[in-house]
Length: 309
Image 1 (cartoon, one colour):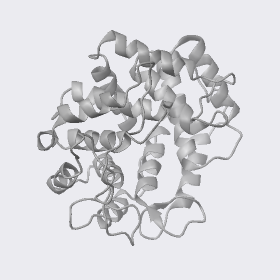
Image 2: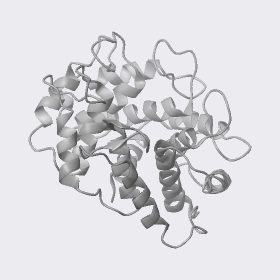
Image 3: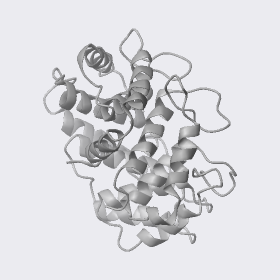
């Protein structure tokens, strides 16, 4: 079972422990967010693969990805197969398709040409750089910690293992700084919660943590604010729901939840919950969307489930 499948199962188990009224409220919010073309969008603009991916992940952990909604979403994904998209959108497409096939029995890639997985794997390697990591774009000169993680996830989803895993692990380790956290790009010195979560996730996927867990846990523990949530980095004084999810997920994976107040993180996220369904991104945010709804549900799921397994 790949990384994203394991994560979906874990979150679904935790969400299943939430009150039914809360689950129904957020399921209704996500269902109502579906557009006429079957996709989902952000707060502005048309449907896109990125937000559709988050909506499908949210519906999946709520146990609501089935029926007509799933068929319409599959039609939207199928219509995108002939378009060239950014890697983050491609991951959303492939993972959304995997969820639809597993949970709703709809095969988005039924009409894809034979050998498409091999072709995709070859395309992904065009993003590989000399340091072992992957760039954000084919033209990009510098490797990205986050996009290297996305590439490895994509490779798993198409049934491939990351190429030259040892060199990829060495690249990730080069992004760790003295505070135990990781940076997104090589020149950076200030670690961030989200690149640290991406790095830890990639090292776990590669089975290459090699004793670095304690330093990562110490860094993330320092990111919890008085609000209860986690902040993106030390220059930002307030928490956000994204960083709270990625940080809590990483601490859970590394057995480090005892180093923070998990109940305070849960209370923080509940303050971002809308009574009509959906979650805001933080105290500064005035609206809700499908992406932050997935992150909010994810935090509640992690706080409800086993914390140090």
